[in-house]
Length: 100
Image 1 (tube, rainbow, N blue to C red):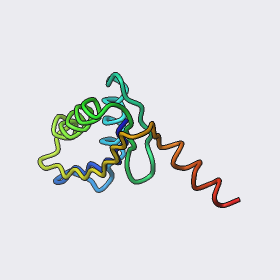
Image 2 (tube, helix red, strand yellow):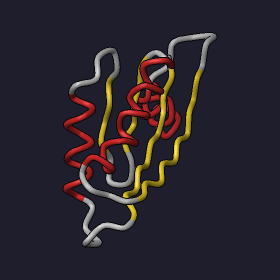
Image 3 (cartoon, helix red, strand yellow):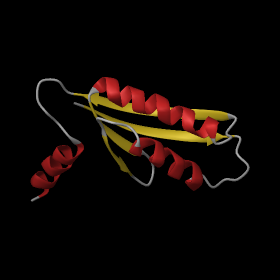
Image 4 (cartoon, rainbow, N blue to C red):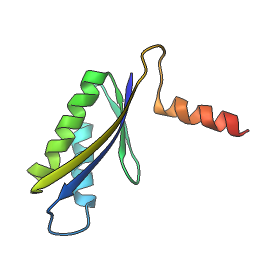
């Protein structure tokens, strides 16, 4: 399972507020099948099979253009572990266990 951290920044918008674009992108994610996702204050975490994660990222990248942005910058960090099943929650739990 792949875990991606995605930050999409619309550029050339009428305002410095991006929350409407973020809300639109969250709606786009709701329509994606085969993945799970979590919005954070600075990015979105997407988990699932690699092909579906890439598909979701491509769809997200297009969303601000549809909403009127003239330019979009997308950054992706990808963790694709194939020797065992991993998840964002499992990674967080591993750190929490070590803090005890």
